Length: 522
Image (cartoon, rainbow, N blue to C red; front, side, top):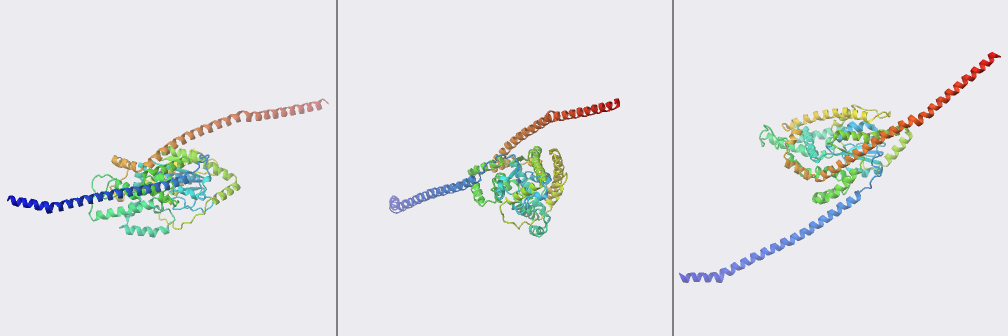
């Protein structure tokens, strides 16, 4: 037995152990080779990533340098053309219907300017452009003769509102039996209507079809009982069986591309609806490397600071009053001056229309909605006469309040009718309060550029408030000074002239009386 063990030991020593050692050595060499290859790949990848970052950085820097406009000498003065840069879900439509359509005649509104894909400069005499198009539209306008105004909103509230409106509009299509029917009907209706279609408006032309398809998919799934029946009390922002949950919405690539930091990209002129050829590459780089977002934010801040007016959705009443005082009064004065001299008006209008660069005409602007017509009728409520020079800020605000009340009622009725189709989901302020803080924090993080831009907008609003107060005080002082002037320097010569005239009359009558007395004596 001992001899057998010794033989087995010798056999393993002579044959097995060398093979094992060789195998282990091969494994070790292979492991070293893999590690070396990984190190090389990582190094090459780092070099490639670094080169890509540097390339992106140069692209963004070049765009920022070309976009750093010279600051206007007097940003507080309204120029010939007013460009209302309408950031979606900030209340801009009420300003358009209840302020601007009262101040500007339809002949002065630039053609296809509101909620359209391109600006058409072919129509002369246009002095107002209100649009969801971004700041890159300025490349088509006479920059030195254009004033820009906008309204910003708290980023979290704007994302909520964007989600709700996307669902609301998409839900209107649920009257159809299926998605194919809804799509075909839309295509048939669009050529027959001259109104403005939500499906032609940025960003809704991307968000509504996406949400519409999702709503039909979930409804079909419920019909096939892939989802349980909707019962009881649910979180309206997390009803997976009925509508896309808010959490899924904010994390979708479409939201990252269009919604998050949307205000900053719009003011910077870098939306996916931009007129700039380099916008796609710049946006891609900023999305890929977040640190490059500071360049975009800086440009957006500078442009915001250079605008005639910046309002805040949250401070609605004060923002509207400030708009009436800062913008409305200047529009009234501008048209009063134009109406006082028709020759000068004709010359200035011809000059303005010839200032627009040539632009390719877009014939693909089919619409399918009468909403714009209805809102146009609503905006006529409380209409004001701006031609006789008697319009005041008080009258303008009174007309605004009448108009906005009717507009909100109409929008509310349409909203209720749409949301009934996805019942029991019901978007409200109370429902928003039930959304977990973790989602609110996520929205805040995803919109870090918009958060900073909104802070800047609040600072500008505070400065505008101070500037307006100083201007009103100055106007009162001037009025008092003029009143004092008319009470002394102007009236004194007038009274003196009357006294002299009375003295002359008295002298005349005395002389005449003496002559008559002399005749009688003779």
